[in-house]
Length: 307
View (cartoon, rainbow, N blue to C red):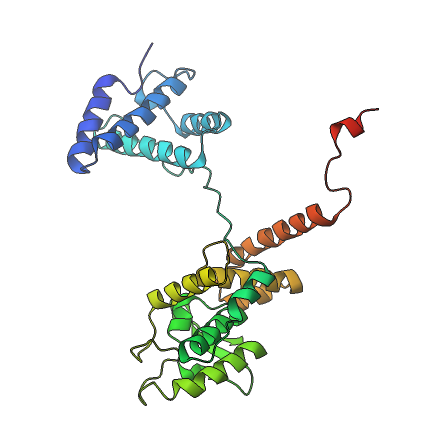
């Protein structure tokens, strides 16, 4: 049986990546294991030297591994190992080109973001209390959910960014892009209550909308900690973070309006494809609703189905 690549070539490649890339022994073994799998797959191909291997052989091997059920992350690692080997083989003049260049493994499936249902969200944001921290946190939570802001956007918001006349907030998002977003009446009321006590604490030259106990702009970390703590205090079972409120805002709005373009604008997404993930979330919600509500959604007991 012809080994392609042969043992000597694999040994030299292993020395190369160990010397130039300072990889761990375990990572080097992973590279060699991926290349051993390539050797096995090439046994079914009519090739006898490295120079005969082309992109068709690599693509075919990739397809076989995919059909065998290899996970997408493992496929990506395998292709990366093969590409690295042929890059070295090209340097050593063992091949005329890299047959793995330009090929892509199946992309890893995107995990859908976690979110809260409307009842859970209401439970979180309707924070009671007249002390200044409770009033601040209520205003912060209401604004996050009302307008779907990113963590950095709400932390960087200034008093002058809130416009009560037209019920909007001005934020600067990714890429330093500014956008104007509507603010709901509940959030506006909470912000007004907060501003009354804020003026008693913050220095005259402090522009930040939300301040910390040190009377300075609240940090990202402080916001995350406060939201996590409030969720725990209000017996919300899942861990909650600022971005979950943004996801919930988008999903709930899309579920009610069906306006994907509008949600894209409000979120400040440059590409519609980024916003489309919420259509999957919306479908999941509808599927769960169907399972709970439709009389024919559940299979009958097997005994009842028997004639």
